[in-house]
Length: 272
Length: 233
Image (tube, rainbow over all chains, first blue to last red; front, side, top):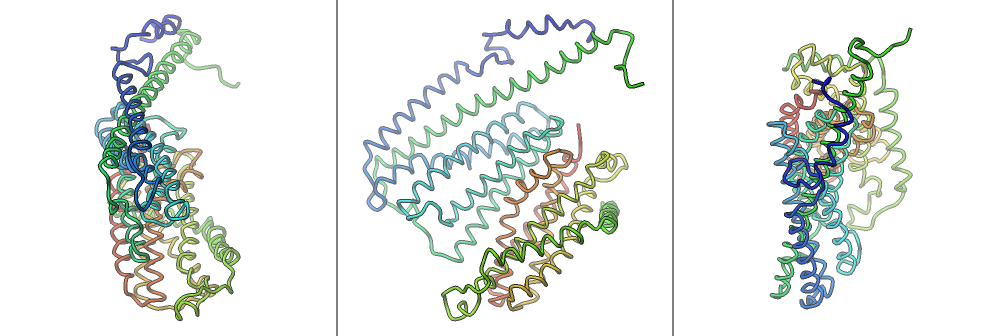
């Protein structure tokens, strides 16, 4: 099988595939679907900025800072409920049938999810400063979100371990499942901890919401979900290309070594 | 599975007895952390509060948390050590070739780590009582807390320790993985210990229940997943 392979023809093949978006091996990470998705995200973000910053009124008690909620809460929902659930599902499917596709989907979703989580933390702290007078308070949501952030940084670190890719993917899949359980445990324990020691902090759900505020919030949810989907698809395709490249490099390397060694010698010349 | 677990635990503890890493390095580290906390929190500083609280120094009030932090840091070393001894010469592969049940390996390694932790907790605990001087309120609640926290740390630690096994990045990866996972355990252990030392046993048993549930969850997760984690290539 390897003797028929010529390294030259292998090397020239990928450029010829360029432009063929219907082939499973992507030549670029963009496609019609993603460009539509991308434009929709940009339009949604633009509409959110207009509605959230210009049209909707400031809130009675929180003032202008309430506008942070239109991006803060949706990004929290997207990462904690959507992104890490996709990672969970991808991990379970990977452990069942070793599908590289689902392994990469789980990884891509977690990576973009962590980005959104960082964004959630940053906007939450920016909101806390004018509202609570401090960037950080030991609010249950804030605390558990920070711990979850570190939790998923650990997941991403395992995905980058220097080891056999299959064993690494299997470990990442186990971690992707256990991390989701941890997400719940952390949230529960921190909530219980704070409920014993201090009264409820300002709950955004208690405040009166104007119609345009509610609209901004739901538009924020749409914008964040679209952006998330757009980024995940691109991230997945980059990961898929990397995977293909690694596989083809290995094959090329084996072919080159076989050609260099010749048909008779099996082993490289060792020490005398 | 139980027989394999016993064999693995006995092997790990035998290695430990002959290498003396626990007594010569991890234990002194735990005690050192206790002393260093005294530098971080001035021992004679007091908090204003109710009459009961005002009579205690800040260090004494914080002693449950500081004790468990010292144990948590030492536990990280014990977990890393537990997989360092398996990383050389492809030991994990050898265990699999020898026909060991992965669940048994998980249980055995957890048991060995747990026994080491108990030794740590007793000695570091005596140190904490001597250095920080809290009262001993409810020994039964304290005992249950220590027991279940040990289990939680050993089971979760062994599961996450295995995730980093065989990688050159293990030393730095395992703390990153284990600390956020054990954060709820630290929280529960601290609250339960606080309540056992200072309050009698009002809210402490709820946290003990939480620790128990955490233990069971990680015991199950470890038994189910260790096969996938040990399998290389």
